[in-house]
Image (cartoon, rainbow, N blue to C red):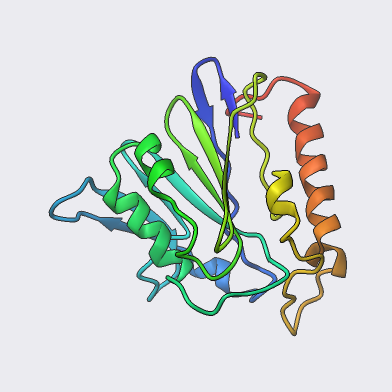
Amino acid sequence: MAKENTEIIWGRNLDYWFFSKELPSFNTLFVYRPNNSPPFISLGWPGNIGAFTAISKNFGIALLTSPLKTKKWKGVPDEVFTRQIIQENKTLEEATETIMPGFLPLGRNLTLVSPHTANFVELTPSKKAVRSLSQQGYLFVTNHFQTKDLQEEQAHNFPRPRKTSIPNEFFTLEGSKVREKKLRNLCLAKPLDVER
């Protein structure tokens, strides 16, 4: 994500094509109007009650996997967790504060964006770290932790689907770092605006 003047530019690719070539064609936009909280939209797939990516009038949230060396088998499903965050919090600051370790069984990178600022929450079952926009107005996120304390728990290989033609490097810690560096270089090469 980047800042253009005072506004945030946020990109999210929900293709999941490495699991199924058909899945992206089923992307569905859900509109939720809960009784006691602000309305929000969520991009997902038919039958999914959670939220991989969601936006309310106050902030948005996106979920990325960041696999760990060890797994905990108890916790809230990812998409239900992110739906609770978007549905039960009114501001980005409130949402960042309420995200606590212990609820998710796996490592996750959560991007939270409001019109003028952004936070990135790195989360394991036992630890939490928050990163914010840099002085240059950028925040780069792929599938690995960038906070040193959490890197000790990071797995070197990520789960790979059985049937995929995607190269192995896409399912490694080093592959995630290469993607982050490429993204960083592309964004910093020249000024970033909505059109670019």
